[in-house]
Length: 189
Length: 188
Image 1 (tube, one colour):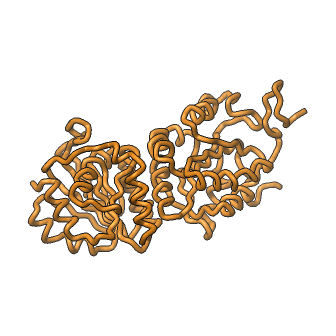
Image 2 (cartoon, one colour):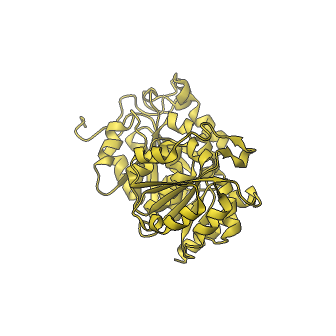
Image 3 (cartoon, rainbow over the protein chains, first blue to last red):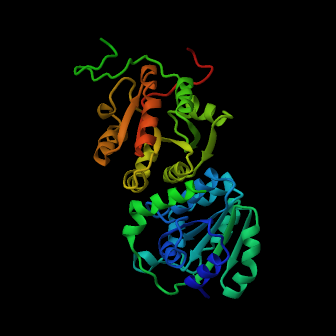
């Protein structure tokens, strides 16, 4: 099973500097540690709202690709967002879910359905343009370029285990500075 | 006298007054809103949602749950794209945490139009016999969220400045729809 920091490193190594990445909680903390960039959006406001934020960005900026790093606990909190996204059908949205089976930001307790829940099947049933399930880093590296080039909405279930832990500073996540920097970076083009 | 604000009868609008959906939709457009994000509400289903869903000048985004609409609107605001969340008061109650986290604590211009299903015409929401309706304004007050009651055609003129203010000051506004707006084809 691949480690989250390894797969995030591999993913961000393929992204241009002007790539918008929307991320949930633990993945967000990994993201800002591994890819300091004002176009990281990590302020979801509450669990379950990262995917809807990403959809809003995708609809508001149809000419820019939006990458979403969702969490399995966050997605479970708003499973209907799979249907909402599939119905809106943004061609510029790639929805990754980091499936480690735990509420890692909340003490590491298991998610309901740990080890059994099939997010890719749910996304396929919701109507995503394509769905993928990846659990091996070499397989991820072989397939990720094609995944990133495919028309959305694309769903990618990343089955993983926690990797290197990065600082979880919720004041950064929820404070105004990171959103002001994001807004300024958007305006700068 | 029927229809005036009165300590005796607690009426805030004419019982038999009208609220024209077309006027509300015109105000929504005039305020620069380009996208309406919705979960259907019986109060606004005919007079607002149906014509909005058929209006080529407004993008209509269907969501499964109202808190999604709050987040979508927030993201759209970063793109200089104005949105309106059109939901029922039950959906507002269900999305309180999203309103708390995104609209209030992040100071985002989330504009919500909320149908008060079951509110008695002309009666102030806080005087409603419907428990869910009765608690809405006190909850919004406790959260520090501005709100306006849109109960008659005379109230509609407040919509554009309210939405302008929300975007200018980057803060939420809730426009409470106090009676079912008339739909195209209804009696004038």
